[in-house]
Image (cartoon, rainbow, N blue to C red; front, side, top):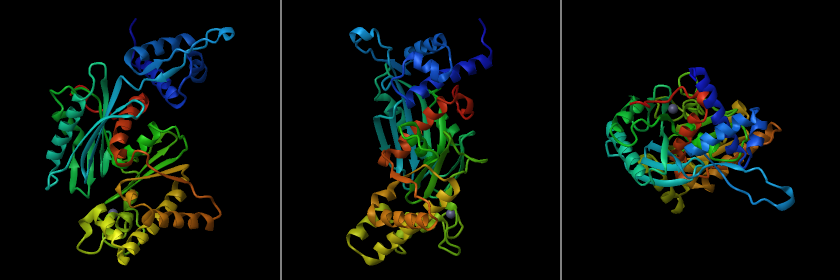
Length: 398
Ligand SMILES: [Zn+2]
């Protein structure tokens, strides 16, 4: 029997609907899946058989309890056989992780950027780390099905193109194409590769690998730069040019300090690391800030508290724009902790109570320093399990 392209798509949609359903509600039986997905039992049985064979799902036998007879077999997403790779290219360096389909980190590797932050060199290094992490997997029983990459800037995911990464000084870079070239003639040749902004990737990490379904979900990345990933009704909001969520470049202070993007008073210029350090020491990063705070230098305490208040203002603006069900904070600046975040939470609470609304749930990312790399792995899972909107897959044939 010949299948048309539409029939293939329909089958893939049903297959991935089964995977997503079991991801959200683990342990369902074939009969329960058929009912919740409105498919026939024989269709579900056929799909489940295939998905178990390919490594997506596993079934666990339950011991029958006498009079009740044979209980239906519960199904789960298989955390063992299919593997996702995620890479973060950031100002701190390159970090690569391998994760299971359920988000457990199986292996990791990292390398610094060279002093000149040369883009082609950084991409070559990322490709090398990806193959190194692959080499640590238990192949062929484990198989890599997708690679995601998170970048600190504006990304056109469709083309795998980086518009800009101000803090790295990179512009107009065909990241997807270059990485695919570097992975040619390696075991990763032909594996679907997806490229996205770092905060967007981290937001998908929270969406894919957490049981919390509160929506909309905003992930706010805080460090040298500031950016957000926004998920609305299970979809990553990318915008017309891939630039949605660049909230670090919304203005919080007219005539404020100059931002890396060239404008003045952007959220990044009011909240990012540079504003927490005195003139001449702006490059000190997290270590510089923590050193000054532990030396109890009053100007630093105030600079960090002020950045915290502006963070509260940005959170308030995000609440007004999106009415989020959940906000997750991540990035190196959350390591500063109370001297920074308490001021943000206080400002946000004041903002909410003045208008008689309750503040949203704000949590810290549970993946810590791995948030972007794990999120990049989640990006691959997000795209592969949503065939209808996976228009951006790069390079499978390469
Ligand atoms: Zn800016």
